Length: 398
Image 1 (tube, helix red, strand yellow):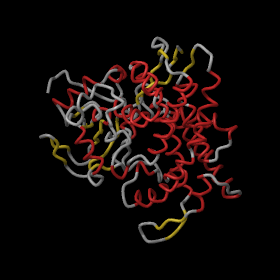
Image 2 (cartoon, rainbow, N blue to C red):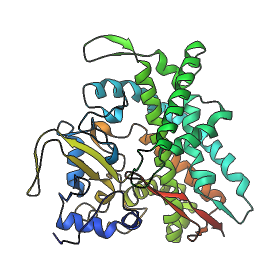
Image 3 (cartoon, one colour):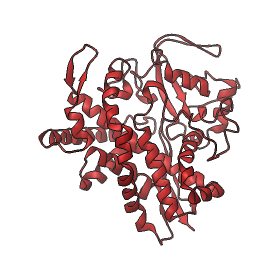
């Protein structure tokens, strides 16, 4: 390994263009160790996939975001993303009912209507900020609809969700602004749950307050407030942030590939494949943390027990060992084997909804605006240790 090879998820300069470094990690140091922040990496597709499957060895219980990982199990309450089996299995079997194919399919027309409300005001104008005016608002509105958040309160909820991902230099997402937003949202969701217990409706929040589960001890019960709040917080924060980044990347990548964009405008049937290729090509969440429960041998390197390991999903999507010409964007590739939604028991519960939002969002965009250019001088990147994309993408309409 060359002495000049260095990668960490906090370096914004690296994050701007990480592909060459990721390639070197895959080729020269597939079990790279960063002594500054004390973590190992898996950068090849096969290794990332294996780690996702082997939850006994690669635990999520100590957190999945590097700056939040500690020797103690993560103080995340009952949020599924920070749980291992059997508790994770119990909760996932329950909350997966919120994302049945039928429930997601029923959301298509509401999603389309939200897209129209957000996009129609820009028809006939010279341009707009595709992320701030559309991509960041769509998933929040969809999730809020699913949860039953009143329309008048959705923008305030979205603003606090954005603040969860606030970054302080040297602190990452461990900062007062982020924590304050988490507290505000927890209090808001607690109020929503209490309201739905008093006056149930047809939304997902009402349904979750009424269902029963059988826990690992064989006791049948309803979810605790902590479990309910953990799930609502997870679905809102994860479901809004990643879809916003996906659509932001779509605006940038399709502007760089106008011929393929024209194909999509002419034939919406190509959009599902295009969404999968976008997820592979520019993973919205390119880094996920895990904690080893035993020593692991990776490419001649011994990763000790109780080590932090970062799974580089973004690198896995560009691994030439798994994909032909991985640095080429191709909507005809058929890249549905990507790992951008995770894999195994922690596969993203909201993947079907995210795919729906991506497909419908792009279809409605292209129906109104078949061509655009990105004003890169005014575009602003968004960067955390686990999320990568754009906070602002001003587009100029053709």
